[in-house]
Length: 286
Image (cartoon, rainbow, N blue to C red):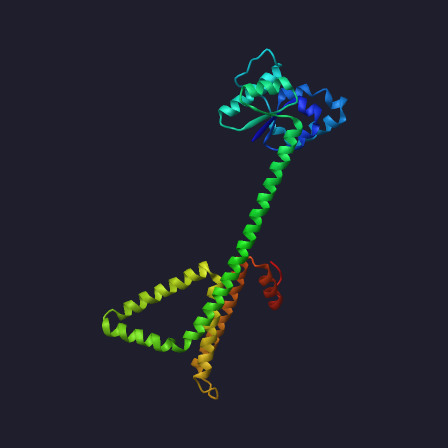
């Protein structure tokens, strides 16, 4: 709601000018009426000058259709005319005044009128409600972010457990699928391999784009499985180039997993986990 301030309310209660936002409007004619108070009344002068410095764009001239009533002053007619035009434009507006004749004229035209104290009380209540709403929205966002962060970490851990659990049977499963496909579709087996590889790769890329932390856990788990398989399925007394390559390949995958894990934690904006991560790896804060 907008509030049109009359000179009578400023003279009676100068504090009405402390709300120097876009909802507070003063006509140039009102400011001209108060010009002699710049020197005659220090308190009014202080509020007027502060308002002009902070909200000069809210001091306006009204050039629209004038309201005419001989029972009120020319300036009051301008206030009524301005308010009526705002209402016609579907904008809520109230006149803030201590002038009883102006209050009566406003009520005749279905315009809300408030005295200075009512205005201050209403603005304080509105500001309090607005601040409370903003604080509530911030709290909701923080809680939601924490919930998402914790769920993502739990899903990532669960994914790693599933990966480890199925790793022992993975070769048998893949071999069985391979035999079925090759028997049923011997001609198109290479096409199926290529397409299947692209689809699986695309799904993992999508997982990394949407849930980088989960992807990182899977990546690290896979690297560990490769290294463990290379060591357990070979004679460690004999240097085997293939096994060495597998081990370094597994280490590379684990390192990439750590990199994606760090990025995933930063995307979640979880300061607690980021703090411990940087402490463990002695990284400077970014």
